[in-house]
Image (cartoon, rainbow, N blue to C red):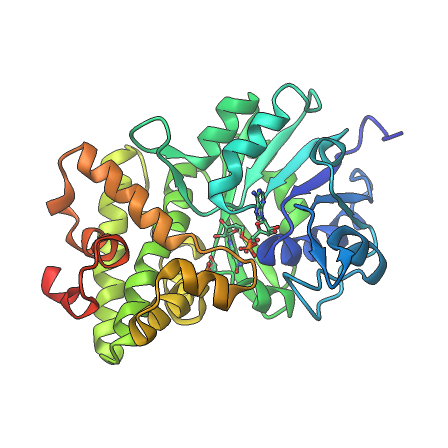
Length: 344
Ligand SMILES: NC(=O)c1ccc[n+]([C@@H]2O[C@H](COP(=O)([O-])OP(=O)(O)OC[C@H]3O[C@@H](n4cnc5c(N)ncnc54)[C@H](O)[C@@H]3O)[C@@H](O)[C@H]2O)c1
Ligand SMILES: O=P(O)(O)OC[C@H](O)CO
């Protein structure tokens, strides 16, 4: 039975980032008296080497598929049942690829603790209702709870190795932002809090489109000046897009970890960049390369490029965002990679 006055954190997701975050949260909850020491982590169950992934995690304390060679604290418990994961949880950390959020929210409706609040670590946008919708708003509206976000220059494997980095919480309710800060901040994972949810979240989503562009010019071996230009142009479109669709997004947000820093790390070390480079070099489709190169991990950048294009088409604004449009066309319309820069 959970002590009613204690916060209880659960993780919805256990991929590459979900597992790296589980390591931090698992440790942090034991440092605060008012946090329950068990952290349940929802695993989308699968069989790995003939065994259930949840059993492997719970016996080896390692997510051998999505974050191998990193030990997780023993108080992190892998659970295959989503509703059992959220039972009694007051702080929900959403960390699944953005294409799966709707399905997960459907299952959670009406099933949460009365004091439940959430934070989304998910980088993407939703366009299913037409127009743009933040993933945090999708969660908020479906589950009727407050939702903060955490985005930053955070490649999971590096965070898991405890290399120093920073991250950014965006929240509207400071008390909730601080409750998540306690669970997430650590000396090597320094988390700042800002009151700009849309700004933080859109940086996290749109930098993945910029990374696809960076991977394309890497594949073409165009050199570092070209890549720097792609990064600059991409940041300008990221800012213009966010401030066009969400009034009140702050200029200062781009100087937080979620902004320029995340664009840089993703354009050098991320999966989106790597797969886009391979697409240019091999000529294989992004879908094939995702399967061949990522061992079950998911790309967010190609789908986000498509979703952004849908939004821009709906507003007759594709010509106002030539870089985002050209990245979309390389991914989905067969625009030759060599023509990317001619289109921006
Ligand atoms: N990996 C990183 O370095 C990193 C860092 C920061 C943010 N993020 C963001 O975090 C989010 C989650 O990414 P990740 O790296 O943890 O995941 P991932 O790409 O490593 O793994 C994919 C996950 O999706 C799960 N899955 C597969 N099919 C599913 C389904 N139908 N329903 C629900 N889950 C399913 C898999 O079991 C696996 O846990 C993404 O939005 C990503 O952009 C990732
Ligand atoms: O590997 P990527 O391209 O999904 O990027 C990972 C993180 O979002 C970097 O902050």
